Length: 392
Image 1: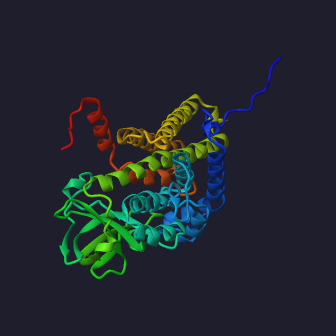
Image 2 (image 1 turned 180 degrees about the horizontal axis):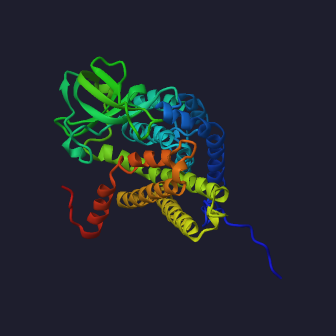
Image 3 (image 1 turned 60 degrees about the horizontal axis):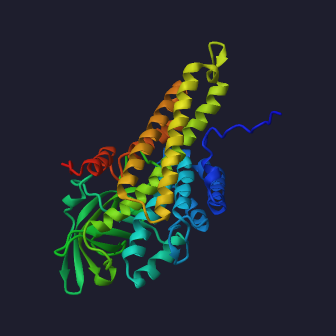
C-alpha cells in the first residue's frame, strides 16, 4: 500500500522546525507573523528613505524580543534557540531590523546584565526590554576595525569620576540611543562605561550616504572630556574579555539571522521562476535554474543545521567562540552568495526594489563585515586548528 507524503518545505528541507520544542516553535511562528504582517510591508520604503521604522519598536518590545535571553528585569527568559529564531525571522524582513534587536539585546543588555551592578541592571534593563530606552555599543574605532586592541579611546580617573575621550565609528543605533556601552582604555585595562546621551561632551553624528543597512541607524560617537560617574562604570569585568564576550553573543544571533535573509531570497526566486517565461517555458522548468536553486537550498540547510547545533551547545553552556566563528563565516558567506545569485536569476528585475534580493544582497555586505570579517573568523578557526596566532 502506498502512502502519500506531504512535500518538503523548500525553505526547510531537513525539517529543522520539527526539531524545535513547542516553545521554540511558538516563538518562531509569532515572530514570523509579526514580520509578515507588520515588518515586511515597511522595509522597502524604510530602505529607500534611509530611515529606521521606529514605529515597530513597541511591537518588538511587546513580543518580548528585546533582551529575550535574560531572566528577570521584565525580560522573557527564553533559551538560545529562541533568540536565534527571533533573529532569523526578523532578518527575513531586513538586516537592519535584526541589527536593532541584536545590538539592544546582545551588545547592550547582555553586558549590563553580565557585568553591571544591581543598580545599573534595575535602571536600564526593564526600560530597554520595554523599548523605552535604546542602547548602542561603542567598540569599533576609525583606525581599529578588526583590531580592538588598537583602541585609542581612553578614560582617566578624576576624583570619583572618569574623564572619557576618543571616538567610535559604525555604531548601530548610535544617534537614537539613550545610553551607549562604551569600551575605553584605562590605567587598569579596558573598562565598560554607560554613557548617557545628555552627558556634556558626548555627541553622536549619523552616518549618511550608505548603500547598505539603509533601514538602520549608523553613527559616529565622539567623547570630549565626558565626565562619567563611577556609578556608570561596569564593575564586573576588566580587559578585552568584556567586549569580546558581547561580540560572541551577537555573532551567535547573526548566524541565525542571515538564514532568514537567504530564505527570503530563495522564496522570491521560487515564485519568480514559476511565473517568468523565457523561450516558451517557465524558468523553473530549466535545468540550470533548478541546479542553482538546489544549491541555494543546500547552503540554507547546512546553515540551519550549524546554527541549530550551535544553539543546543549554547543552551548547555558548551558553546566555544571558535564554533561561533565557524558558523558566522559559513552562514554569512552562504547568505551573500544566495542573495547575489538570486539577484542574477531575476535578470533586469533583480536590480528593482520590487524584489527583495538586491536589498538583502546590499545589507549582507555589512553583515559579512561587522562582528568580525570573514577573514577574522577564518583566522580564528585556523588558530584553533594549529595553535598558531596568524593575526597581523
